[in-house]
Image (tube, rainbow over all chains, first blue to last red):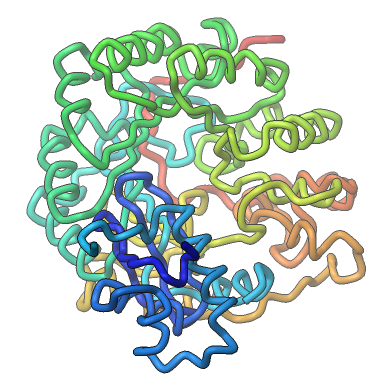
Length: 91
Length: 373
């Protein structure tokens, strides 16, 4: 299953702080600070848990489909650094 | 957005600092010869517990995710645990720097029980002779005892923090082995001519050949060794070291000193770099957002005398504090410029005109002496 089809959420140990370039994401568990360098990525990240998949979230946020691959890449990296994670509650 | 664009954004400043250092007290049981804050005696005007909590409330509202607590020796404060627990309870992670003297078995267990807490134990030599020459008699044993207590209490990966001098640069591998043996993380930082370091820097700072040695060692270690991004002046030697290649002073970094004064960074306790006080109307947030000094630091900086050097993009002209306290112009090369561009200027600096640290809380009895190596 590609990340686009996966239900995601912000890790509960992560706080986002809005900044002019996007946001700072801080993971209290790993103590890692991650720069989210696009305001659209921040908006999508905040909405993840309201939609059944990443692609559904992108659609709901009005992100043009041509940009989805770059969002898939950005969220793969956020997933790797544990800022977002796969949501388990969806069957 | 590319990494370069991100750095450009960060240079224009953030809505709140990423990396805030808060020195809780000028009191210290040690008298290290390179102390950045010339600590020793408590200042009678230090922030009260209630004032400290007010500052933490502000930092919480600004979403400062974590703070670096230092001193002096922060554990000397009777309300040390109260302040740390209040910070953590408000979602502000704490990393604190200590010489380890007050980490006994009971305190180690108390610290180990807290979440979102990092401890950084200072050690400037791999043996007592090297360390104690800089940090004072008995300080090596005290630091090692603290590490043993933390390990016994299962604290987890604490940090061992080393200021690199010309006397310990050959010990970097051994420091790494020591850290590994505790399951700890090694952090090495640059010696600054700040505080009492203004008097000892010329004797202690690494030689030019040693600068290359540090650079190559760091390149080989990658991100397994922490540096607080303090060695970016070495980037002129070749490929950049890991981390943000920029001076964060007043942009993403600042210092709150024990009496509540806000400085651009931990290395510039001097009136010229004082932006205001947390006791001013509007508190810390007002100082951070509106002080003239910080607004000026967020403007594009001139490369000055470095403009014609091909390495400027790599090293950014180095460290503002290092230049200031060695009497060099701020828009010129770092005193440890690896291309040697500061050597002539350093040779002609009039020592009597070199800026002195504005505050000195050293205990008067101490005469500074360095062991011969």
